[in-house]
Length: 259
Image (cartoon, rainbow, N blue to C red; front, side, top):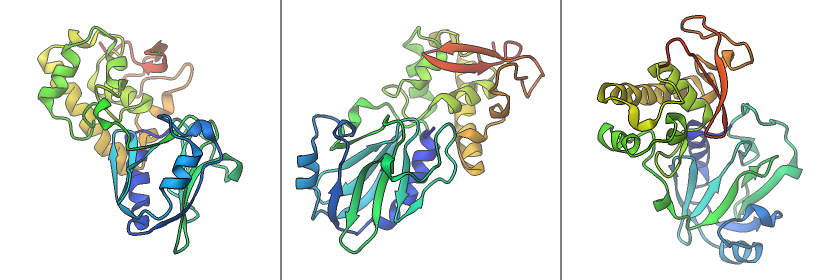
């Protein structure tokens, strides 16, 4: 499932299209176009514009152009195909089959090549000039003081607060479970219940988790990941993991060391 780390991989994979001019747009799925956008608009506005850069805020990938900014969201199963090559060959919990029937949006360039969004479950989407002000600070760069304010202002479960993209952008189910596992904090605790030392410990855990899993190759490479099955045992202390729903998401955590 694409989280911050996967979207950063997609962004890097898209760098070869910088400088290219869009010749045509394929938008076969009206539902995939968001923010009131329609096929006539993207096919009328984007051909002829040049890609000038790539960017990312949380899980939102950006293609900067000399016209509108193109925002790409990949949902749970979206993959990026650049010039025929998949940016990721193995996407956790998503199909890795190369089925063109799942192509929801594509840019075709005047000098050949393409950028395609392939999404079996249609949970992603495309926008023009997306409103990035609705997103919180990127989890990879947020510093301790704003991170502490984000937690202090909420009685929501800790995991739900961390996954709220309007508060902290980029963290998904796997990254949050791994970070809380490493920090020794229960996902069910009210966010504002954390003491200052616990906030600092969690902030360090998030940053280290992103660095470590990024080096390993993605959000699915965490120490907790192999145990995320019914009856799985905590990799730290051997306790049977709890499997609960927090913030509407299936959550695995250790009742022994996560308090």
